[in-house]
Length: 258
Length: 271
Image 1 (spheres, each protein chain N blue to C red):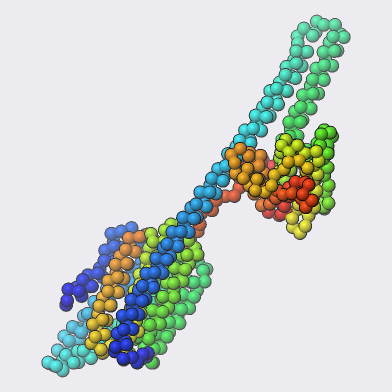
Image 2: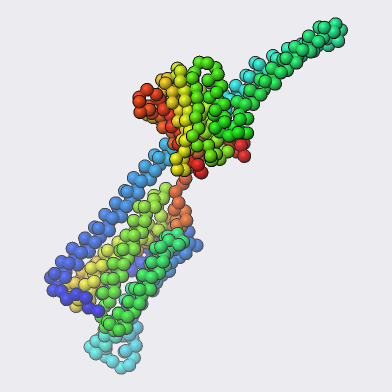
C-alpha cells in the first residue's frame, strides 16, 4: 500500500473524530444520518479492500495455486467489488435524500419531490443492475445519473439559501457544508465515474482514476469533518426576525379605547 | 449499461478538463452564494438598523407627546381649576355664618358661578381628551363640530362636507383619524396663516378619503417626509405613526388649480 493510499484511508477517520470532538447537535437526525453515512463509507472501504484477500484465502483452501489462483481471485473479487459499488451508489443516494429531507420545513414541496426522486432513482438503479447491466460492468450510467441528480439537488438547496437568507452566515452551518461536500464530491467524480466503464481498462485512465478518486474522497472527508465542527440549523429557525410596526403611543390609545 | 464508446486520448482529455471544469464551477457557485448572502445580510442589517432607529424616534415622539399632554392637563388643572376652587373656598370661609343674609347670598351666588366655571373647565379638559361627539355620534359629527368651532372663532372660514356617511369606520379607526385631522388642523391654524379651510370626505371601493384644502402656507410630500424624520417634528411623527397603525396613506400636495394646499388621507375600511 503506497503512502498516498495510507493517507487516503486515514482521512476516512477525520469526520468521525470531528463528530466526537465538536459540538454539532449530535441528537439531530440530520447529523446522525451523515454520521451513519460516514460509518457506511468506512465499512464500504474496508469491504472493498478486504474482498480480494478473503476470496484469495478462500480459494487457496480449495486447492487452487499460482496464476490460476490469482486469476480466479481477480475474477471473483471484481464481481463482488462491482456489487459493492452498485449498492454504494444506491445507499449513498439514500443517505443524501434522507439528509436532504431535514433541510426543508415540513410540507415544503422539496421533501415530496425528494421522495419521488429517490423512488425513481432506486428503481432505475435496480432495473439497471438486475436486467440491463446484469452486474457485469461498473455502473457508470447509474453513477452519472446519480451525480447529475445530486448536483441539481445541491444547486436547488444553494438557490433556496439565496432566496431564504438567514440572519446567520450560511458558512457557519452544518447544513451548508454537507451540501457543499456532496456538491464538490460529485462534481469532482462525475466525469470519472461516467468514463470508468468505457475506459476502465486503459492503464493511463486507471492512474488518473486513482488520483482523482483519492483526491475527491480526501476532499469529501475534509469537508465532512469541517461540517461536523459546525452547528446544524433546523429549517424552522430559518425565519427572518420581524420588527413590530405598531407604535407604542397608538398601541396605548387602542388599548385604552378597548 | 455502457454509455460511452470513446478513444483513450479524447477520454483522458475529457476526464481532466471535465473534472477541473466541474470543480471550478462548484467552487465558483459556492463563492457566489457566500458573497451574495453576505451582501443580503449586510443590507438586511442596515434596513433593520434604520427601522429600529425609526421605531426609536416614533417611541420617543409618543412618550414626549404623552408627557406634553400630561403637562398641559396638569397646567390646566393647576392654573385654572386650582385658583377657581381656591376662590370658591374663600367665599365659603367660616366667617360667612356671621355675615348678614345679603352678603351670604352674594357669596353663595359667586361660589356657584365659580363652581359652574370649574365644571365647564373640567368638561373642556375631558372633551380634549376624548370628544363626546366622537364617542356618541361618530367621526363625521366630531369633525363637523371641530370645524364649526373653528369657523365660529371668526378668524378662519372653515367648513366640512361629507359625501358618503353610509358606512362608519371601526371605532379605533375613527379615533385615530380624528386625532390625525385634529393635528393637521392645529398645524394649519398654527403655522400656515390660512384664511380658508375646507374638508371633504368621500369613499371609493374599500377606501375612505378625507381631503383638507387650505389657502395658507402648506407642506409638500418631501417636506413632510423630511420634517417627520427630524427630531423636532413631534406632531408630524404622531401623524405618521397613526397613519402606520391605520395602514393608511397620507399625501401632501398642491391641488390642480395650484391655489390650495391639499392633504389627502386614504384609509382602508378594514385593517
